[in-house]
Length: 414
Image 1: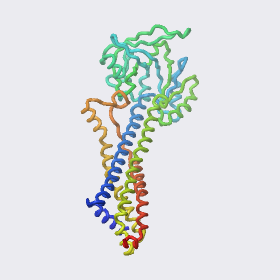
Image 2: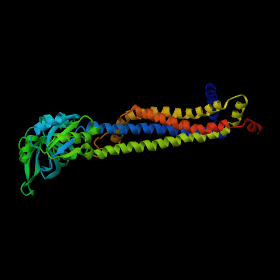
Image 3: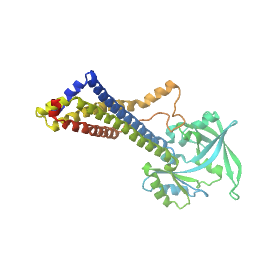
Image 4: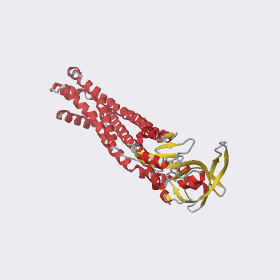
């Protein structure tokens, strides 16, 4: 192995000369190294961004949107206090809270905006939602009877500021005929603003649970739904179906997979596409090693023949050219890993700087984050490096094997 490493080093040094075919072989070798470098760096950065979006999905979006909901389609749920306590005692449930949800309109002066009004019980809501982390002004736990918290985009649409009066128009339904009546006007004061940077900001309107009960004519024990926070968000659907069996009421069972599942599936699909595309790029760069080694074997036929006449074994020749290709891959992998890790660790700041420079943030108002998240997972780096080395070694086997088949008598005779 030491002899093979020495010969491989001498071959590389000779191939570095810029004369004729030597220079062209050197160019192909460097091109394959650069291809591997770029492939590894891009894969590490892309996977880090995907991991960052998945992390933000769990810790940002899923900490606010309901993970599991039981919604009464017709009659309200009675005796919610005991049912919340019962749900909280189930395995896999981290918290439970009641809510009243109704669609309505928010009005300020002559402007109107559609909203989803949610009446929440402050103390219990904090157990199932991290809404306070994204609220400016008064928090949900501090809501008074005549207070309302609205999403940032609603505030922007209506031109509101904290302290302004807001009118909520709540539809009324005749329980006897199921016909819509004229909406009920509820005058409130804006005391807080939800700013998550996503679609929630377009519709969110929070009021106290007892206020919503009074508006809809419910008793203190009646709500339209119950909400859960689960220990494992990725098992939310299974938990929802299992735990829901303890509720005697007729309810619709819903988990975040129904409301936000497409976003999670998109993230996983992009991860798969990135793996396939970038590994194909690495594969193409790795098999450029085949071209460079095949040309080098042809160029070094006389050297190989002399080595064989001096007693070099086929295994030595094979190892020499395997090391030649492995070294090209090693340089590309090491540089690509360093560049990829450095970019992945600083891509959030880089994206913010470029957005400020361009004066436009392409993520604002579109996704649930306004920045480019990144989470470096070392397992991804290990898999990337391992697969790249495997592809590089496979690419070196055929040219190295061809080198062992050279007949010294024919070559030296010519």
